Image 1 (cartoon, one colour):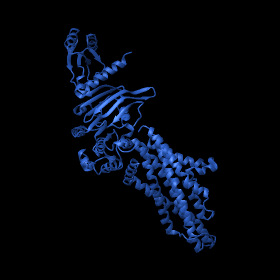
Image 2 (tube, rainbow over the protein chains, first blue to last red):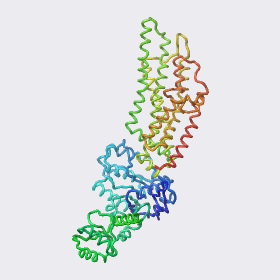
Image 3 (cartoon, each protein chain N blue to C red):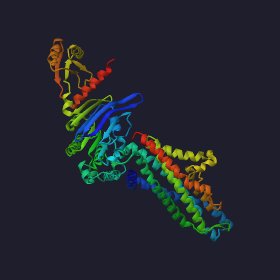
Image 4 (cartoon, rainbow over the protein chains, first blue to last red):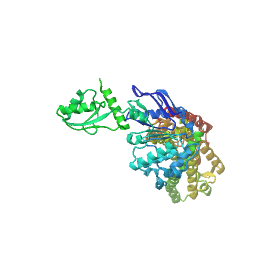
Length: 307
Length: 285
């Protein structure tokens, strides 16, 4: 059964369509990672799905409820927004008590257990205003877990966290997933996301380019190579002339970034040497959510660049 | 309705545990105290003049001299307290939209209209608290220096203490509905603006602006709730009561004023809340 089901969601601001017919299904018990660059429509999609914004068209069901009736779920859904903190003037413990009064879940988790779970025990009596961004995030997560939700939606849950905080949160998410909580995470932290997601979707330009189990998504990774050769201009020229080789726009770590079928690598290296290039590296990138994402972004940008 | 109660309960918890709420309440309590002190200072030249002339107030006059400073200081506390309430209600919801609490609430337990109505449930409570705090502060401060006997001016008894007390209670009672409506107006403003700062500015500007230009409405102004809220250019029942306590008027409060103040604010508050619910229902949170 689907915890979240979005069908043909569209959102238009004037002439600008920011979400274009997006359909998405998050199965119960899964950990879904929604990734995309800034402006890809992630936040708009989440806002429409959670009833915070009216979509132009399309249907959304969250645990079987329509977005504007999510309050009827009685704590089965919890959401952690990027900056949300209940009351900056109250202490950490008072914030949780405030949220307890604002909710009506079926069952409560003990507030001390939660404070301990998110690593804020020593700060339980501190004013929330004095917390760092990472600590606020953990407080927000604690608040979300108060009512033992079945579905937890987290918008950029790892941003602002230090390495230890990220580790703690990932561990926490893993434990929740093991307990059967469905998680939808929207994040830019692709490396970390890859560790816990069971399903992933890549949003680009308001469209869901890839969507499915993480193994399938990673299987879509085209073979990407990085070539370091001098002179760079000549190397680019040779690469562009070689059959099956596509030069990608991004040059993150210097050199050329190429997409090519596996059998083209020897041909390319031969062509580069024959053309007089000083070839110092031709390395295959590892398949990861990051490479899938980058590949899709490159394709998207290349498509946009076409006249 | 249950969602509204949840909001009211949580807001009450937040306000009670917020230091700024207590500081604000203390400051509002100090307003009547300060007004009484100013009243005493303003009376000093008159007392000196009387002393020089060898004319002193009669015991009866002194016995009832507390009514005027009581009503005036209470009214003054309600003017500033009313403005503080307006700002509190206007800022609250707008601030929760800024910080994301509104989003948390609507995705968990409360409908969008519940966000508005829950806060509105607190309005009568906060108004009673305001009236109580300012009234108590005024009563205690005035009671130190003045008496609350029959109202006697130049040897004539204008009203017995019981009459003045009864008139004062009526004035306070008809001031409650406009103050509740003022809170609802604050909630309406909070749904109209994007930020908490905008809500504060718009609500204060709206209230003070109306006060400045209400004369343009002529006699129709009586049908607007804000006309009955104690304000700087005051036409409320409390303002009328000050005239009574000073002995400038013995006519009491006109029925039209009393009825307008007691009845009209309720449908106006309902209208403001209805519009606020409609707006929040369509607004991005």
